[in-house]
View (cartoon, rainbow over the protein chains, first blue to last red):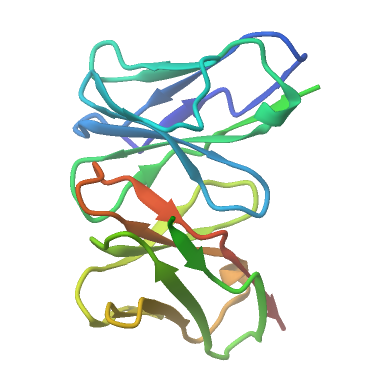
Length: 112
Length: 111
């Protein structure tokens, strides 16, 4: 297990389409986070899972966004009816302890 | 609200030392992190401070003063590969380890 894996690395979609991203965390990590980052800004928290339970969800996450972690392993983030403002880097991170996360390489979404 | 401030950009010379400051005003505090992020890549963990003082790790050191809401990251013997953004992040108490992030400091290293 070499780290957190995210797919795809890049996604270009037309406005109004749905997209789904996948994150495979480090296998022994029970905590999984989704963040969104735009250019020149720090990451913004979207949602958090402990095992399969989604324990926290940011107010940034509109009804168009949904995340799952069905078996407490990989997670998916779906955006429905994409808008140009959704263009960003979507980062997944996992952790099993208090003193830091490991991030995946991210999925860069461009909505045209 | 939560606020974390860092300089937007800094320039330093290869071989020199640079200090990147971070100040925070948050509703609570349960640790401060520094991450490095190269353009187009994910952040990578550098350091974690939860108690006051200096933590040294090779060429990188991080300092924390909780009473002042202040931290700095010190990079020594700068190398060209250190050109990156440096992000400061604070963990709030009882926050499921969620981090509040600064916007990052872009460090440019010149030969």
